Image 1 (cartoon, rainbow, N blue to C red):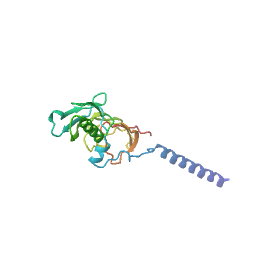
Image 2 (cartoon, one colour):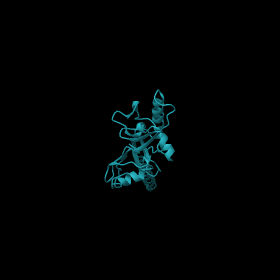
Image 3 (tube, rainbow, N blue to C red):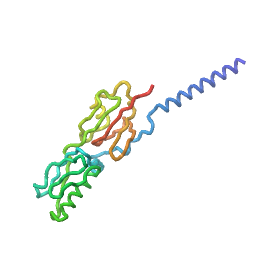
Length: 197
């Protein structure tokens, strides 16, 4: 009889341990991936980065000072360029936008135009959730996830420091590990979740 109750106690203890392990694994960060966001060099970010409202551009048409200057992507996602009018920009990579400007200038205005487009001021990033001073922050080239959290004053005591959710224009929302060497892009919206005890 005593042996039977001892066996039951061991079985109950094992069941409790297994439940605790299952609950702990449920509380861990689900589905953390960051491969879509990893950008290693400036050339890659230049190809990947898509223009958006509020970006300030410097367009240089070589040999044509009156067509060159600083421009902004307006609320309609377009850039008003002298001679050719409004050119769609929002959601387009810089190279694609540059090629469109060049093609429009070549269509009856200039012979073999050479155009360069640089971004002067990028859209800001946003950090919210369980950080001390969330809000809007200026984007700097090469900004990493941990840097953005530091700009927002660091984590609150309630923060889950293992992952964040990032909303990126054109990509949707992705969960990323805070230990990754993730490079942010202008306009990224970062949310630090609350941890559950």
